[in-house]
Image: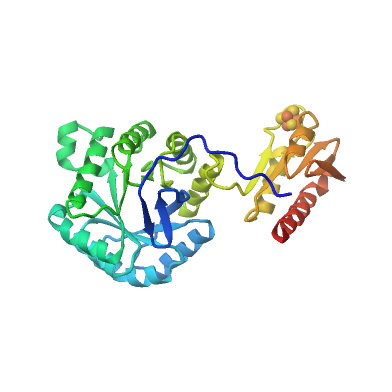
Length: 367
Ligand code: SF4
């Protein structure tokens, strides 16, 4: 039969309002979405659309593009039209680009209350334009650009300062009846970030966009994000996520998806259960696990594949998986759904596993 659906998440989801970022629902009981941001100059339409296509292929559901200049604003209509996934325009400093983004057909706009000068005067007009177009606004507070008033009041970007900035900006929109809002309160320190989101979650029902900002290069940033998102998501907090890495954006998407899958917040796809190896290993487990992972990358059906170095835990794990190998003595016992279907020489393990995975995928697609 089919592999089991994911187990239950660790906690019920926080109750939040639901909004639409184009076709993607965010908040309420909508699945938690994964987003990223392009690194190209937005005005370079070809390069930006190319990167959006790569992000889409990697599983990204919402993409954000920076809009720091008029040339970028001018590129938005074509990008919004041609992108396969909804586009959010990221606006700092210039309220006029908010209107341009809404007119361009962007699915949402992100504004940073710390960075939009004279923003407060424009809220009424922005609220009306966004409301008429059905475009939600993300109020994205960032520790690095906290509102000066709050920086003076709190001395630094504390969780309280981040939350106060966000809720203050919300209140300006609420005065005009606009509540189509999601919020982020990002900090580079996961502990401050987690505290900020916990406080925010308790004080409003807006959907929350999780992010650890400037999380660092891939290795450090992955861990920081996984730890911080893990803490919040395990409490039911978070409606859409963006992992920030100093690495190509498709990497951010992979990490984001893996975090959701690890917490049973998304159906797992390919999962490799491989042992760390030890002195008992009779094959090169790392190499085997890497080769199997590479060979099966991009498989759309959920599949748990066990790659085990020896016969101690090997047969047990291999039996629990959809497919597996327990190695020993230069050979691999290949298991499918708990049954040993064949024993192959070590040199044939990878290709046999890949063939069997394809067979299982075909059967699942037929069912
Ligand atoms: Fe060691 Fe075997 Fe366990 Fe792998 S499965 S860690 S080789 S005992």
